[in-house]
Image (cartoon, rainbow, N blue to C red; front, side, top):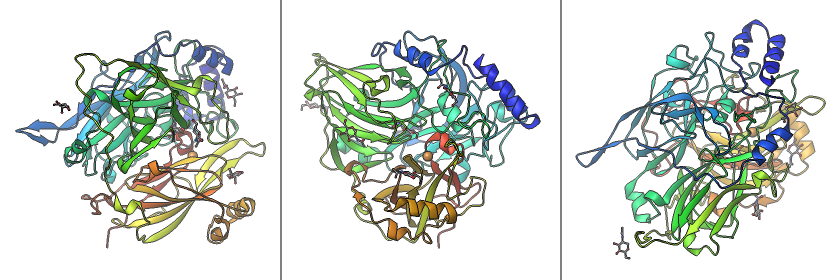
Length: 590
Ligand SMILES: *[C@@H]1O[C@H](CO)[C@@H](O)[C@H](O)[C@H]1NC(C)=O
Ligand SMILES: *[C@@H]1O[C@H](CO)[C@@H](O)[C@H](O)[C@H]1NC(C)=O
Ligand SMILES: *[C@@H]1O[C@H](CO)[C@@H](O)[C@H](O)[C@H]1NC(C)=O
Ligand SMILES: *[C@@H]1O[C@H](CO)[C@@H](O)[C@H](O)[C@H]1NC(C)=O
Ligand SMILES: CC(=O)N[C@H]1CO[C@H](CO)[C@@H](O)[C@@H]1O
Ligand SMILES: [Cu+2]
């Protein structure tokens, strides 16, 4: 019913050009869906009855005569049914895997080796119709012959532009149709960065939010034994991934995504933020994990479309943060709560031998939208998962892991390195007279407008990111790594915002005279080279952006200036799709 309503409305509003997409918009909703129904479905799922799964691991190298050598992987995207909870009917999802049977939500964890390039052919085996709404009025891929366009981006990785998963490099099943930036079937990841946490996910123009919501995401790790092993972090069975994502479910188990836009006369379906009632970890709603009295390494990835998480453990056990995104810290930092933006990753150690209780819940207290929205405390989404601490058995190996004293000293993280260029990047949100968001732009420009950010390869720049919207936006720059140096409140925000709205020029609008408010300290556990930086509203967030390899201070060992270039964007997927994303082109180093 709901799906038919969406279809009719679309067809009526946008005729010929979009009829193809509309016809494929078989949004799964069955009956009349209200938020009370969605709450009821999520609320009916008993918490902590499904064990937390670990996704299958695929090695991105093989050992030959004692040496790690390259391999070529083929990973497909399939539609299948996934069980998110014991009591929820199977859910149609789009997921990654080496076969339909082994495909999982999230996809398999790819373990790559530093210095060993990995070639992946990402194959699209998706059906003709999408399982979620897909608004053809935002700038999106519209294949003429139908099918679901996809393209894969490896988040956090330094790789050549033709393997970046450019939003316009999408392709449909069998590579039958391809977007204008498409170059190759095989993507080459050089794995030249130090060890850390990455993730791969769909990046199709105007469709990323629906493709990720459907399940097209997975974790990717680069290991570097010379660096990793001496730290004696928990490993093997004690080294776990937690991929957190919020989702809404219909009574029939299908994923729910509201197919009525907030400003339907402008965009019939697009909505600025997706929030689900149920919190899933590794594809299970509110799972539990049995742990022993020992240390565990947890690599926590927020794969929600728009939900921030502020997680803590119910009995006060600390998280020892050892890494953030794709980099280790210079030393672990103990925190009692962790604020995780969309697409952000924290690598932590939790010492369950110190647990005063046998049950430890992981709680979430981040308001949504962050930071000014509804509080989840006391609600379903105030809980994430539960650890059940069991005594060590006689056969358990001793826990020889540590929380190391020292990790990787990225020298330049403690000071602002010399930068060659300064840029002002302003986030704008546009609304109807009645206050409904219609779109969001960076510097007042769309993705398809000419490139304005053309840094030189091998240099470091200082970007002042100014939020003129009401939300926190996670900034993500492809290829580059970021390091947060200063977060300072804008004073007399109204004068500045009015000036920016008219002139779109931070210097003309005297940004220096406005960026004089209180400075928010950069948390110790974010003092490293990151892939996502949180940009709070009403502040100037200053970020050092390195267009080179930060551990060796060397230029990239590939041509980063080639077509089709890179992009940078807000990682709230619903924003990115409409159209908080801009092209990024590197110039050759001098
Ligand atoms: C879907 O969006 C419409 C329009 O914003 C709203 O009226 C409706 O309540 C939403 N449905 C749910 C289930 O949230
Ligand atoms: C996160 O939650 C903790 C309590 O668990 C609170 O002290 C902290 O201020 C919150 N952080 C943010 C950024 O909201
Ligand atoms: C996860 O990331 C999304 C998008 O990048 C963000 O909107 C959301 O708030 C994040 N959620 C968590 C749990 O960190
Ligand atoms: C762990 O430590 C114990 C004693 O400290 C030692 O006997 C054992 O060999 C170590 N195991 C490993 C795998 O290093
Ligand atoms: C918290 C905060 O200062 N938010 C501001 C972000 O920018 C928008 C638009 O200029 C303001 O309305 C918000 O108050
Ligand atoms: Cu955003």
